Length: 168
Image 1 (cartoon, rainbow, N blue to C red):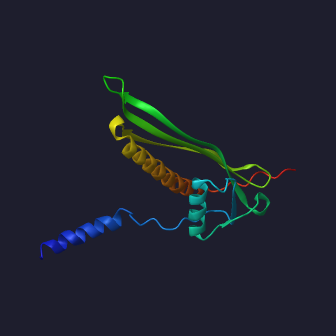
Image 2 (cartoon, rainbow, N blue to C red):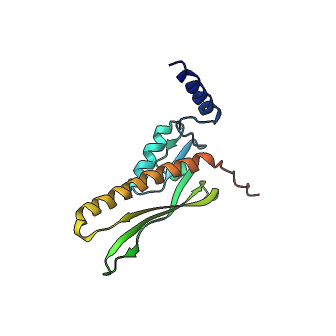
Image 3 (cartoon, rainbow, N blue to C red):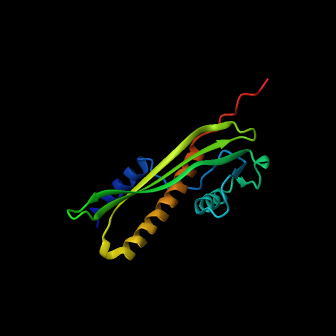
């Protein structure tokens, strides 16, 4: 028991020294943000939920009421064949989710450089288990969507907006 105490103390010291800390709430640098996304968008709903959870930014109903507008420019889901069996059947597929966006002010000027996120997941495929593989694919798409929301929030939090040069 006494030999375990120094090991535990050393472990806690190393953990505290490495800078580890739990991820807290995101603090966006905008007072209000308009999301130019359709109401039926699952990604938009997840992003709205994450912004509301941050507590520091309000979601505006119209772009004129917002300090900044989040504008998606690309939302593409692709499925590619990675490998085939000797008989020509699909063995592996790759799911690719690409999303590009801009954050603009009321006049349409970029507040941060336009960004793009690309996520990929590989999965095996089997013709004899079509239903289970379809469910696995849907689960992977949902996981990628949740990951996309987290990455968008991290990027929106990390990048400080540059005020556009005033027009003279």
